[in-house]
Length: 292
Length: 229
Image (cartoon, rainbow over all chains, first blue to last red):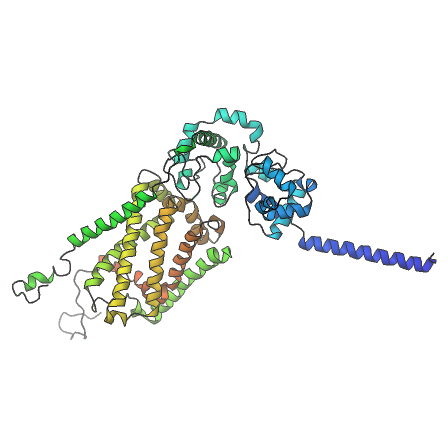
């Protein structure tokens, strides 16, 4: 049994320790724990194409309450490298990969970014829910509105938007500037989109506003809801017949450019065949001395 | 890092080009020249130089129109002219590449040219050769450069012009394209330190100068009816 003064001293020590711990905790939280508002921006850039918070599953699961469902260490490891975690045989990761066939890509997040994202998700997306919903209007509610969108979208109009035959109303560039699909002769800066809908579903239509390097372009010049619906209808149609995709015109362009060089070389060597001597020639004609 | 390469470096490059360019013009006016080696060797020079300049001038023109007037260029390249224009660009870049290679060979193999070639000449001509090759590979493998330039590269460049830098337009681009941008600004940075200054010595005043001119090399003797001014 302790006497009163020593008890008081013990209590004082306890208080001191606890407040020091809290102080340290606050300090470290302030310095090291994630910043939810930075997380909100990151979520929009890196996650919103496949995940929602509280608006249902898309390519990946709805992340509402994910920080309560899984412990932080698991989430950190997962966000660092999903494929490695599945390969390591983690039972939860395995289950996730079975339920959602598209393996989450390694997003190359830094530890700070991971902390920010976890902090954001811990708030259930409260800080940025509105803006992320606004950024993905129409598609955020995709599961519920899928039926109406499907009937509204026209694959033909979608194809015209894709190739650039019809321009996007807000001035965004046509898909074909960078993508090809169904052998329509589009670009190769981005991947061929013929069968993308089969793998990723309706979420692909949110990618222009969510994924770099399209994100800055299409967040300034967003697609309208009806354009999104038309594009989805087009992608559904192409995914149904994925054999239409073609290798692209690389061989043809390469052949053409080599042919062009040879042809141009032939033309100039004919046209310019007397270029250097032509001026002097009349002046010295007949002498033969300066003739080349 | 991307801020350094896609914001800082372009500003540094243009600042160098302008400030050192002006300084060189004021302090060493007559060095604004290509230091032509035509007198030392003309035959090989003609084929290389003529083809190189036709190719690079047309290619630069396309880049500048796409940069200065993105809607106009987008309208041209977005239509049925896309394929022919892209093919023409590929042909020209290959012509430029071959012609520049030819000019490099000439500098190596002609002794009198070799001895008047500075280290900076080799640097510049090597960079130009790589830049031409990068451009060729990019437009072949990341199609269609003429189109995506308008909606990504042009806004990035304009964001720099308007001092509201938005590197995010290009930070996620493939490495080769970023390298093409970097080499481009590196060439701009080297402009005032090399023979590239002859770009602005283009004799544009030639177009409206008097067709005949009498230049005295000593003061004419004043006489009746002669006015000195």
